[in-house]
Length: 440
Image (cartoon, rainbow, N blue to C red; front, side, top):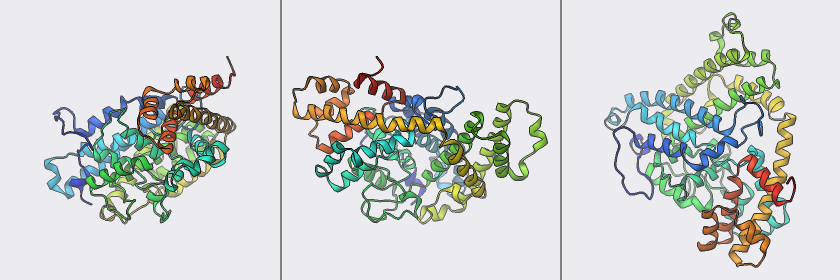
């Protein structure tokens, strides 16, 4: 792979547009994402603590903004050195372009996540795995399509949303490539889970051809007919996410009293090493101030470490040989593993988290059951008043696509899943209660 091709400003299926002197193509990508309808919904989607009552607990929106900020720093730091190594790039690109690509892709990294966090992904998958109505579709779709349905994946849903014509984003190939951490489909018999890029999947069958075009434009190394090596900047997007959720989930857990202040400070100090100054920290009185100072220092240290690993492995990354998370091989690896272990035990399994996740396993399959019947009603021109009314609750673009596109059963299911997975936490709960006649 080569950087000139990897930094492509081409927008797939879009006519060449006018250039702006004040904004690069990648900055335009960022602006298009932040003003998009799917991004706005992240303000009421679970990060870790569902339906938060406290104003300091992170949602998917604040998490995405923070990941984007860290991503920009990583991109600029790496870009500065890349431009020194490949001086021919300096004619068309600056370190700010690297920062803007990673910032835009990071901003969108959770766009496809459903209500109720990762429990929501499991709930949508379980409908087709365990619910009789969902299981019945196994005989009506292809093997590859069935794998999509029984393994709902937020990353693939995000790529789908970024490419849906209804949102009109038309992002550059570089940003789409950096966004795709898992450049392979769900049905991939030769999957090698030792390669980080193959642990999950990054696009559904409906977007397979779209990703192929993006990969060809970027010159990504193709490993088999259906999977590719990552865009190098995808490693930085992943690192930004790993850094933020590790440190900021811990910070939230401390503020909620799930992890003690002393334990939190100890785990952050393990990353800082000699940079940690206990006496200096004591001069900061409030908990928010203490955590804020530590957070800034820790994130800065991790950005340095991950950027250094990336630059050290750059040739191997371009060859498609390096395929690990940067945070898994950086000097702070052991300290991050300790934070992850404590977070799983004390934060992610906290009672209020588990309770709301359990409700997600009831709400999302329940909504799928009803709205799939509404979708079938539209396809078959049925006479049911109930499902005619439910169909009216679909967004116009979803209803139009089901009624007018020459869609297969799988396409109809994909549209319904778009609708249900796109709901916010509160909207999903409210709609479920109304449909079931509860809580009027």
